[in-house]
Amino acid sequence: MTPIKIAVASGKGGTGKTMVATSLASVLVSEHRVQLIDCDVEAPNAHLFLKPSINWSSPAVIMIPEINEERCTACGKCVEVCEFHALAQIGTRILVFPQLCHGCGTCSLYCPEDAISEIPHQIGEMSRGLTTNGVDFLMGELTISEPMATPIIRQLKGLVNEKGEIIIFDSPPGASCAVVATVHDADYVLLVTEPTPFGLHDLKQMIGVLKATGTPGGVIINRDGIGNQQLESFLEGTPYPILMKIPYDSEIALGLASGNVLTDFIPQYQSEFQSLHRRILEHYAKVSA
Amino acid sequence: MLKRANPIKQCVILSGKGGTGKTSICAGLIDISSKHVEGVYVDADVDAANLALVMDAVQQEIHRFTGSKLAFIEPEKCINCGFCYDVCRYHAIKEPTDDQPTHQVIDLLCDGCGACVYGCPTTAIHMEAQEEGEWYYSTSSFGDLFHAELFPAAENTGKLVTMVKQNAKLFAEEHQKSLMLVDGPPGIGCPVISASAGANLALVVTEPSVAGIHDLNRILQTLKHFDIPTLICINKSDLYPEGTAQIKALAQSENLEVCGEIPFDDDIPKAMIAAQPITQYSPNSASSRTIEQIWNVIYEKLFHQDGKV
Figure 1 (cartoon, chains in turn yellow, orange):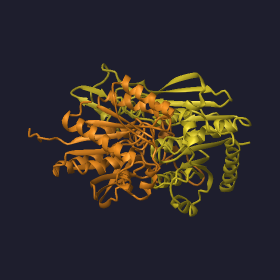
Figure 2 (cartoon, one colour):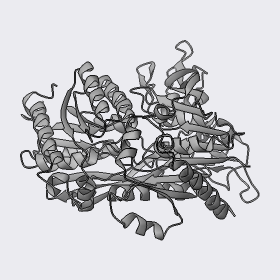
Figure 3 (cartoon, chains in turn purple, green):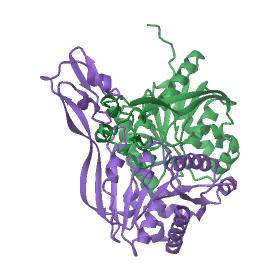
Figure 4 (spheres, one colour):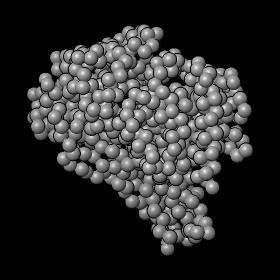
């Protein structure tokens, strides 16, 4: 069986991405090797549900410039080539602003005096562990006050188990760079949304991302029944089929609030998520044919 | 320097976790506050901008937003030396294929750093600024709204957030407004930092769930780092009483005030469908009354205690 990378994304926050990602992982792990990567490094939550025992962690770093004062002639080349204004010249000194640095290495590449070395600057942490049912779990956490999430997501992607059978990416909300970093190498994207005007508006943004990355996807309607029919009417004219509906249910809300995986506290959902997986594979096979 | 007697007060609404109810509560606060204070309103969640949907906003101006740059390789100049491929740390350069005989930039992966540009031996690469979104000035029966849409898959560095806020602030100064309410994005990274810059007060909307509390902690630490006075309100407060108790304990240990507890209310999606703030859709509901109470606390902090919480 070929590995299939499934990203769970939404546009709007709080629609149930983590609920879907953790349930899917928990159900599929009984028959497959499953890896789950929580790519929402600003607000990572999957570990609160899966409760893995973490056995590995590593700082997530970007390489930032360090100026060798003895070699630096203050020519200003580094300041000139930095697109992110992370370097500034004050008199004969070059100042580095780590929070603005993207770690691209352009400054050190073009320094004519070879006066710039690169040193690691920690922007977060990555952890890995196993859940009791055997999911290979990975997450990243952005350090408080650091702005850039995407370098951590890219580093997490470097830890994808290419021998895994199923790899699930739990995406951050939104529809910009961090989401692109999460979904761009996925084979399939599950779009979790709710039948409200906000859910629909943000789903359209997310569909825009899928058009840009060229990734196929299907939709899960969560809290079905709280809103109106607009979402379903919109989806009729798109290549994104509705794969599953989860009704609004206060039992689900309470179970999730207290940190449980849906398929654990309502076992009837196990077969629902198994059929979801079948539908994903069918749709994936159809669109990639 | 000439100083305004009453500088504009900025309040930003944040949450850490997405979907806790920032926009619905913000719309309610706009409705109620507009009866007492002249304000401008900003939707700073440019990835998923929803505030205009419940304010019955009428677009008056559309502005293009040019954000980050991308590299472009001119195929006629490229000699396939591979320099760009070697220096790119974002794996954004595609090697030649049968269909495309020269090196190419993969737009989605390009960070716009320019590492490939300056050293290209045939100067075949240049940078082009990208149109990455739009920002709008709209009017509504509640007042003036500044909002934006980042194009899907664009880079959200907080630049568009800053742009919208700056324009809102200039407008507010010009029209002698006293309040700027900012509906912020989820998370704690760059767009949140941009949305919070210059804020006199932050209102954090949280929910009693393990995920909500985990992310509440992260946004509180972020606000503490940037030294922004903070109030907490608990949405869907009756959903999981144990969680509500935990939030209160966390607030107490951080010495922060919980200024309102909004019970779960199925009128909130209905108000959204009616394209109205909840306070207008069902003014006498428990949630509307609590939003009014939250506004009173915000008003007190901003205008009588100078943001000191």
